[in-house]
Length: 524
Image (tube, rainbow, N blue to C red; front, side, top):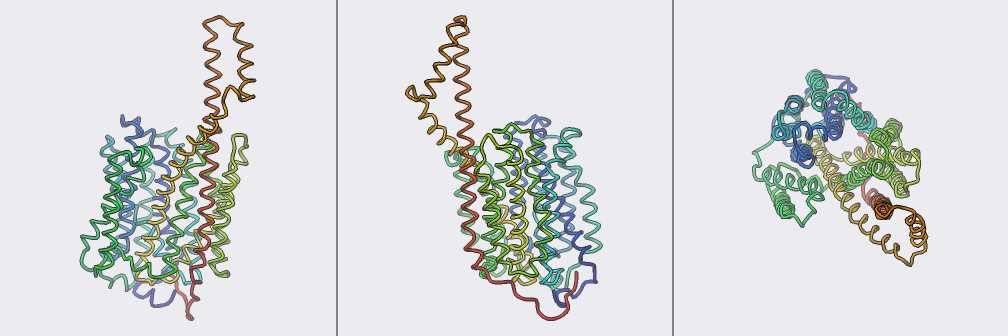
């Protein structure tokens, strides 16, 4: 980074800046994973059903999604440091309110405020880091920041399980208080706005664009979160929300491209690297979140592993990422970033393909090893793709760019989870019908099975004969269901493999990151 970008702020060690922005991001991510684990306990404690309690997650996702793309605009409106501290304070205070919520309705309201506070933490952190390091060191900066991002979801489920088992679900929110206070102190001491941020004006408030954004993204997030549970478009609610969302988002795009002071700067997509990078990140999130959702479900429902072992299987992916991130950070300074993105996508494709080969006879090593391999791919892709996507974005537009970038990853994740659950249900039914077709009186294995039952029944009392016939039939049906679900999981993973492979051509539509301009680089 050059001298001009740092004008107007005191010299601060860039690694202290990294710690300052990592802390808030770490808090937001770990809270999300801990709350997911604690959700069933919240439902029971607040006398609500699990379906009702899922609004605790939906409320957060909706408000989070709305804030992400307007991070740059809000930073210009309030000043970036002031806005970051406001978000940290709002997230911390609302976390305490969530922990003390007396009923489900109040908890949902407090989660909306928590989502507003948490939505901007990741994009602002990325914008500050990308600005604080010279161009040639941005890959290493993203790698170090990524270690915090990856470490949080590793310990989150384990911490969430321990808290709910030994304390109370309310501590899933209370644990944010010390991290939030630490983040506020570090931000106050080590984060400063450069001159261009101080001089930047948000312009007149784009109320029309803001309204379209809130309605469009809010309705879309509810559709994706509740669609499968409501059987998609057989539900009037889902149908109406979908129509409303599509209409609002189309109007948003039209309005933002013609207004002088857009709340979301869609003109960023004119830059080829950014457009291709955001598209890749959307589908990257699509497969990442979808595959993460499937693995513990497979291990717990079909393999009868407990939640702890299923959580550790996921954690191995984080361990793989932790191992590769420092290496990739160094490689971004030596190798064309496009090759690193392509390599990361290929590693991911191989890992997900290995998951498509899962069956009900695999051992635990076979279950977690592909996830470990996927961790290498995730770390490689995340660092190199972020660096390459932002390589040609000006400092003034960085806040807007990182906000949209993170929004598309999260939206991709929501689409991925919705697609995975729908595909799992539909393909499970398809395979079950195909398997039942072979269970006919003419099928030899079925005849052998019936013959064995017939040999046992005559020696039993009459009132026992019906029970001993019915139980094996029920067991057979359950096994058919189990095998059908196993095949459906394989179909999901095979589909995700194809998605990863289809992204490879997009990588080489991107241009190589520009070489740093001559001159000394400076820290934040």
